[in-house]
Each structure stands twice: as C-alpha cells, then as structure tokens.
Image (cartoon, rainbow, N blue to C red; front, side, top):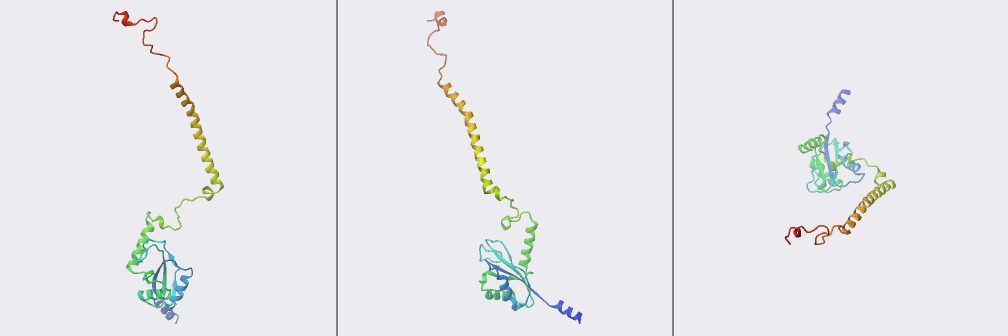
Length: 208
C-alpha cells in the first residue's frame, strides 16, 4: 500500500506558468493573485520579482517606461496559456496589455534565460539597471555636508585667497619699478653739436 501511494504521488502531474504583470502593484497583490488562482489549486508560487523600469519592457511592446513583476506559479490543475491570461486579467481587474502568461520552457523564455546568464558572466553589465548601485563609491555623509564639510570648504577658500594675495604682493614692487624706469629721463642727451673738448671730426678733416 505504501508503494502504491508513493506511485500515485510521483505520478501527479503539475503545471508551471510564468506570469508577468506590468506596472505598479499593490503590496498585497501577490496574496490576491494566489487567492484568484485557487481555482487551479496552486501547489507553489514564488514571491514576485520586479525588474527595473524599462523604456520598452520585454514581452510588452505596447507599453513604455514600466517595471514588470514576474511570478513563478505551479498548479495541480491545467489551463491553457490563453485561458490563464484571460482569467487573471478578469479576476485581478487588469488591462490585458499589462498581463503576459508563458510556459517556462517556451523558446522565447529559454532565450531570455540564456541572455540573463550571458549578462551575469559579462563584465559589461548595464550599470544603470543596478538598482542597488553596488559599484558606487562609498561616500561618508559628514564629508559631503554638515559642519565638517563646511569647515573643509572654508579652509580651501582661505587657502586660495592667501595664495592669491601672496602672488599680488610679489608682483606689486616689480610693477612699481617698471613705472619708475619709464618716467626717468636718459642721462645721455643728443645736443646736436660737438662736445666741448672733442672737435667735430669733419671740421678737423677740412670737410666743413
């Protein structure tokens, strides 16, 4: 009898779905969704995983700038993807364009999973999608604002002012000397004639 019960347990077929909801959701949305899916006898259901806001969310070509919450659901009773989609839209009062239901083993889903694995391995992961900003440098709050930051800024300003004053002080005597040199007449003057005691060489030579 024990072997027969084990056989029955192992032979029970379950059905997996990947349910995607676009847009902002209420905090208790997952509980309401699980209650709505009770018709199909939910065996297990994951907590919703929300993606960052995307300009063109995957699987939602008609929508823009929205986040998507994904639920992994396993039921004991089957339903087609279309039936599940219509049922969720009606029961949760959601626009049909905001609901997507797929099977995890669909080619499009397997392709998306492969893309995610490649992104994790790649060193060129989109940093803007990292909502936790793991690569952002650590910044101490007291170094950015507050009394300590203001005192540091004031010291830098005073330092710059002192250096500027020092440079101007060094340049002032040089400028004064230049002006004095420009105003002082040359000690050598051109009198226009022979200097006393030094006859004109042309007169001496008889050429004048």
